[in-house]
Image (cartoon, rainbow, N blue to C red; front, side, top):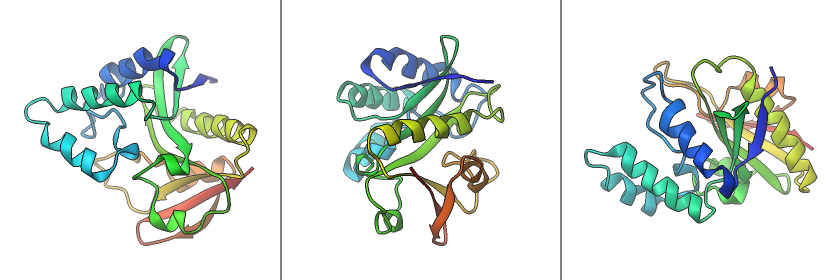
Length: 193
C-alpha cells in the first residue's frame, strides 16, 4: 500500500497534533504519550519539561510540542491514509538534533548527513511497510537537498515491552542502508546518496 508522505510544515500542525493526540498510542502502548519533542531539545529544556509534568504529562508534552512547532523546532514527515495522519518519522539535518544522534555517529560523519531518529506508526498500520516508505521518501528528499547520506541509529537490544522507535537493522537493510559502525548499544546504518 502506498501512503502519502508530507514534510512537516505549519499547515500540517493540526495533523501532527491529531496524530499524537488520537492515533499514535491509541493501543495503550506504554511509550505514550509522546509528541516527539526530545530529539531537538537540549538537556536543560527537557529537564524543565519533565519537572512540570505533575498530573498532566500529556498536556505538558503537548504544550511544549505546540511551542516547538510554532518555532520550527520539530522536523520530520507525516504519513497519511487519505486525509488521516497515520505515521510520523522524525528526520532532518544531523545538526538539528541535540539528542538521539549518538556521539559516535557525529564522529564518523561522511559529509552533509540527514538523520532519521524516530518512527511512530498508528496501530493498524504497523508491519505494512510504512517505515520503509518513509525511508525511501526521505532519501529522495535528502538527495534533492544536496545531502550525501541518510543515517539511522538502530538499537542492538530492545526491551520487548517497548516498540523500537529507532527502526531495526533489518528495516534499514531492506531500504538499502548498510552498517557503518557500532558501539555497545547502537548501529549506524547509512545510505550514501
